[in-house]
Length: 632
Image 1 (cartoon, rainbow, N blue to C red):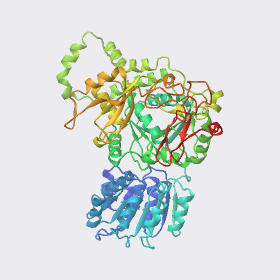
Image 2 (cartoon, rainbow, N blue to C red; image 1 turned 90 degrees about the vertical axis):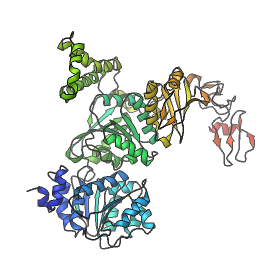
Image 3 (cartoon, rainbow, N blue to C red; image 1 turned 180 degrees about the vertical axis):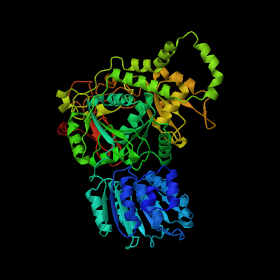
């Protein structure tokens, strides 16, 4: 007998989930389903993400609700649109053999009028993100007075995202006698408080120790110098040829920088962050789910609710500010009983955070070494050999080409053919990693990595950013394509390189606007770009490239960037004296004349440097006081 039938699930649901590959219940399902099927308890379930919580509450709901009635009987709140859509899709799949089951997904970034129409037609289960749900409630477009069950899924993430007040307002519209089921990966104090506020003597189920990570995840860390972070990251990726991973960064800017640098270096990567529109976000996620992308570069907030199967690695390019976020990050891999690896790239001063994380998740981290160049080359070679060995041959299609192929290879022995074929990939990596340096941090340096002085003094963070094309002469170009054409910076970079055959490494800053964009290319490639786009059209519109009116060389070598206390070009005027970043009175080195950063005052005017003075808030010009200058 099917184990799910033994848990109390009816045949038509079991038949549907069997087609989805459900054979045996996961531990959270096995323990929670019998309790929830009674329908008589509030419930708190604590389990790591990816352990099957959707089925744990979804299957009992399908058993307990009356689908002859067409009003809201269950409300499921979750933190993100991705998770909202995933839960809705899962419930529809579980109920595909059941008539009259209506599930509506309510989330921001989609047409609210469509959602209102679906609600008006009749619905038994509403799956919603808090913000959009509250909007619909405020329009008095839904009646929750007969709701029997409320599910709070990923409760800790909802609270982390600041939905406490929204949840309070939504639950105040539901009956007091309803049953509340709360599921969470971690149990911080805020989740404990919400359980106490909305539940009466709940049945608590904890799979593993509170706040622990998934037992199927291996945790590794690499200790490197801050300046070697991007190079180390790429080497780790290259050492794992079959990687299908999510890379976590701390900020949106870092996310975009890393993604652009990876695209330039030939990797299938893209960024996911809060500045993307819903349409752009959906496009990125579709490519990732289709595995057109190998690496998804994301912030913590943007990645919440992502449920993609078979993620092999989670890479913490930057450790999270909140330790509990590490549990959510690592939970993106090893889902549904599979295994995965969570990698952290750190400098010496972050070793203390690794020890903290070990205590939080109750698992030891393994210190790993950045592979040598030879190790990477060897790994890539045998990955290629393995791929060739296992490739599926379409005999029918390739048969017609075999005579020509054999003719081409007739003078080569079997050994020669194998050598040449393997060398196609081998030579590329061999050249790239020739004389590759050791990127592991020396043991005696670990106490000072993050604070390495030099380019940024105390603020060594800039050394961690992905490299830009900063040392070459660049020309700024205009293109009549922008975000309305569904381009983000990564898309535009790929479009430029595909049409002009230039390397992504020679493309500098890309600035995407609404109906147009600007991008920088090395001066030597300007003519190639102009020629490449001649006669090209995009959706029936001729693509137009022009040199931007803002001139050339917007990115200059550091030594040429400032002269005589000011900038030599680019629209800023230098002065003689005034504000000096290095506090030295010598001329020419790292100086900005006057107070030469343009700043807006309260009246909307700009302060300008130059004559050793600047405008005060009234807009009148006054002389710098010596004591004021010293403060800087």
